[in-house]
Amino acid sequence: MNALKNKVQLIGHVGNEPEVKAVGEGKKLATLTLATNETYKNDKGEKVEETQWHRLVAWGKTAELIEKYVSKGKEIGIGGKLTHRSYDDKNGEKRYVTEVVVSELLLLGK
Image: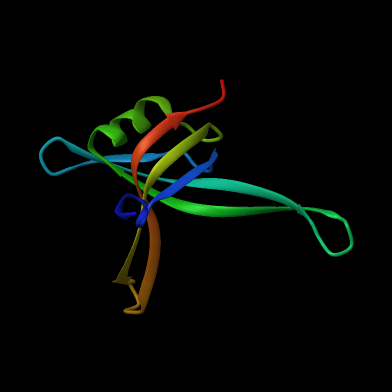
């Protein structure tokens, strides 16, 4: 069961052009968003489509693959783990962020 702890798997479409930057000595960091859609029928029998947005972060080789092959609108599958962090914004207010740290990437679609 330990292999199932804090494991996230998502399939969706990339919401923005990935931002990739070098950090440290030759290591890369990629950040992007992923939209996942769910369709269901509400109480009235009407079809409802709901979109959830996810912040993704990838390091190293995975970031390099994202830089080379992933662009806005591309359908991808990812595997990783959830992380939570906080920071103080420019006004001194504490902000909280939930992200998926990507460890696996699958290119889907055309």
